[in-house]
Length: 129
Image 1 (cartoon, helix red, strand yellow):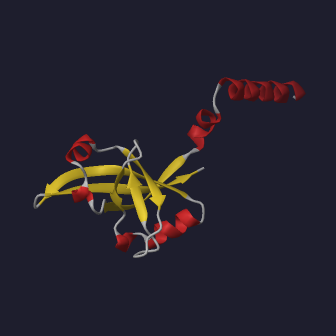
Image 2 (cartoon, one colour; image 1 turned 120 degrees about the vertical axis):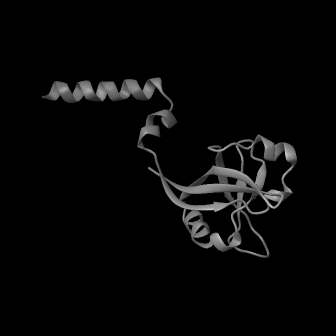
């Protein structure tokens, strides 16, 4: 029985040595869907940036300070370009979670045009380890 434990420990050490930490914990990460909303101010996006967006694109959320709203959350694409914001009416709980150290991400769920304005729908997810 002691040899089994030593063998398992040796296998674990081998896995850690062969992979980055991110690759090791990736199977342990879950994304929990919290809410669906849209990107506020998407109409201000450059046409090229808007055209490059695709359903399924992963987005980052970033807390920002604002004199108008203390719960402001910016939305960034993979190139770290600001796409817009979480609508003010939807930010309070997400801002509190982020301020408490929780990791939130977003993913584009739909892209459409309504009355000549782009509407980019997103899902917000809690990254759980």
